[in-house]
Image (cartoon, rainbow, N blue to C red; front, side, top):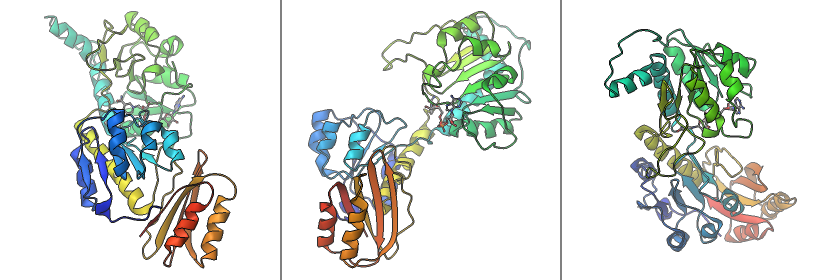
Length: 408
Ligand code: NAI
């Protein structure tokens, strides 16, 4: 049975050189028992060290498999100090009552800035002119070079990045239109369009900010490129599968569009040691970047703070808001109350047994917050009187219980 520990007894392991902001944030909130390691431990090393830690932070290289989680007796939450969470067996973590957090918004601004810069460079023909300069050719001319002020930016996918970009682009004097499959609040003076075709035919710059899903695979192919205006440019800093790269190479070779900036590719090298191959190598007026849209020092620093704060909120308060694998519960503070966290299989009867157990112990419930997801139930119960160890033992004994602990 887990009960609340003093913050300095909560052992935290941060792996893979996580930005110092993370430890600083934890220390400021009283979590002083932090161990930092620079490397991503292989499975055996991880299995040997994991049992003693209550909170763990990783980046993308540490593999948290079901076997590793099976050793994680004390683990209450896991933080991925990055965007992706493929390196973690999320289902196994959920089945063990362990929420996993990540940092989906920390690099939003970084992507939006790169896209704006690329829009400016493409409309000035800078990629082409720079390549000629490197080859020793001077081509001073204003022909085909445009300001972005007054031009139409067409945003496909008006989520976090699309929305941020929309605001920044309007500040530079652009007209913004957007297309999304979901109804989205228009920011500033941006206008939604009825369909993708309308966006493609009327934009000077088309930029993609959609997730990688079956519905976005090859969203931009031969027909969509043909719908774009001949001078228009395409920017993709979302996911590599969203653009049919062969079709794009053909459209650029035949100068059917004005240029492109591509940051993500259907096949990307797994490390910097592998060569990069693409049909776009000789494409005209094209910027190629190695999936660095979100890769800035500022984004790394934001990630350190964002994930550390989510771990702290869960540890202090039980809040699981924005957990990737877990029922999301956002909670008020529990001043002068004891807070019970009960994580269980979402099967009929568990909640009624939890409540019956509390009522038979004469405990009055001051607040109760329940959410379920992926067959996991998470209930947070505020009680306004002392609880006994016996009560905790009885709650834990309820069939289907995964974890039960108390916050003070
Ligand atoms: P988000 O989830 O906030 O927004 C995505 C938007 O796309 C949503 O509004 C959604 O409704 C919309 N959408 C989904 N399917 C669509 C479709 N078929 N047509 C039109 N709209 C559709 O995501 P966020 O944070 O804005 O990220 C966008 C993309 O950028 C993601 O693919 C993400 O992986 C990628 N990304 C790339 C980075 C890089 O380094 N290049 C860094 C960060 C994110």
